[in-house]
Length: 315
Image (cartoon, rainbow, N blue to C red; front, side, top):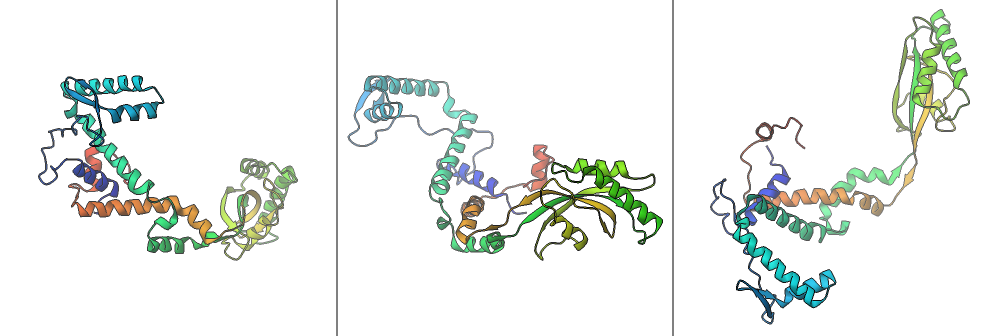
C-alpha cells in the first residue's frame, strides 16, 4: 500500500534530526539527546560579556534580546544570564535526554523546514511546477464560466393514475388546497411546504417530500422539464410555484437557494485553487523526500488502525 505522505515526512525529519545516527537505527526505547545547549558566538568578533559556571554569555545574545524585547542593555544582559542559568539547570536535571523534549525538538525542525521550503518559497501559483498547475487547471476550467444554479424542495401527493380518473382528480384537489394556504408568501421553508401538503392530503393519499439536486437554467440541467420550467419561473427565494403534475404525482415546488452566475479569468481561478495546489505540491515534495531517504513504514493502514485503536477510515 502507498505510504501516507505525512507519515513519510515525519519519519524523514526524525532521521534528519538524529544527528548522524540515521545510518544505524537506534534502539526504540533509547531517547535521543538534544543538541548541545552550550552558547556559541555569532562570529569571530562576538564578545563574552558574562559567564555562568564557566559557560559564556555572548554580546550577540544581549543585542538580540534588547531588540526583540525592546528593553535596555542591562535588562537584556540579565535576561541572557537567566537563560544560561536555566539551560545549565536543565542539563543538570537531564532534560536534554527527556523523550518529550526530543519529540518537541523534532517537530520544531519539521515546522522550520515547512516554513522555509513551503511557506517561504511557494507564495504564488508561479512558484508551483507548471505541469502540475496545467493538470489541475484542465480539471477546473469549468469554474471560469458558471451558470446560475437554483436549489429547490418539493412536496408531492404521489399518484400515477391516468388523467381524469378519480384518483387523479382527488390528488389535484388536495395539492391545490395545500397551495391555497401558502400562495403569495415569500418566507417559506421546506417544512412549511411539506406541512401544508400533508395537512391537505386525504386519507389514503401518500405524501413524499425532499430536496432536488441544484440545477442550472441552461441545457446542462438534469431536472425533468415538468419540474425545471416552473422552478425557474419562480420570482423569489421562499416562494412556491403553482401546482404541477408530473410522472410521480401532483407537487408543489419551493425555490430555496441561488448560486449566482459567475465569469472569471484563468488567473482568478488559479488564485482560488492555489491553497489546495500548494497542499498537493507539499505532499508530492514530502513523498520525494521520503524516497530519497529510504523512509518505509513497517505496517500497513489496517495494522496501524489496529495498533492505535482507531476505527475511522484513514485519509
